Image 1 (cartoon, one colour):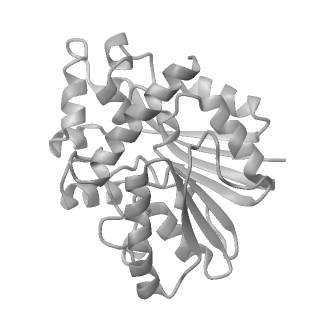
Image 2: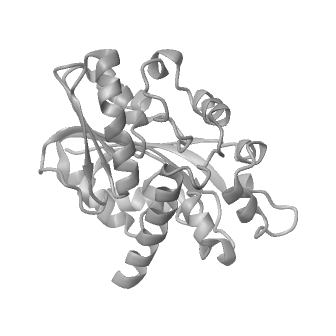
Length: 274
């Protein structure tokens, strides 16, 4: 893709997620808190993780639980790529404690505003002030070299039009010995072209997904090592149950007798900087 195409994709994603943050569009899990909670619990978040979340931090935008995958430790510095309403940053801040630092980066000002507004509520509930949210693109992280112990991300890298650059940035900001723990969506087989070109499918985390082997190659090219990719079935039927408009629209583009579950799988990715 050329620079103009990449910018167009980012603008499409930014506009889509700005609308979600403003409540003008449903999230990837529909418009209700019940649905968001249903999906979040299905992905392995427990009550201890969720009890101190500010209202609205869980926006139903997850496809895994990278904070659990990372096995976070006290005192670590954690960076969340595409932090949205702050779900994983708030959880990470609790796990790493006051000696640690949790940083969220998001390119959508409306999402950033939402997360920052919730920070004072989180601090009053937990006594923790060990977190911050920064405006930036995940292809150009506003983070110093060799400064991060753990990079996490939840259903976001698939949205990027320049995934090789994302992985290079992850490698740049990680400390030697640091690790990336990523939950994302990947493809079992190539998508129909009509879905690949669909703006709704891009915002719904489908059109930008790539094959698992392609992800592994990009991570290796970024000079990260000990790459582990765990495949997990991701039941997109829950989106239909929640009447998610993006997924309903995408389903109309599928070939006869095909479902989204024939194409999409959830992956947990772990890789290290040597």
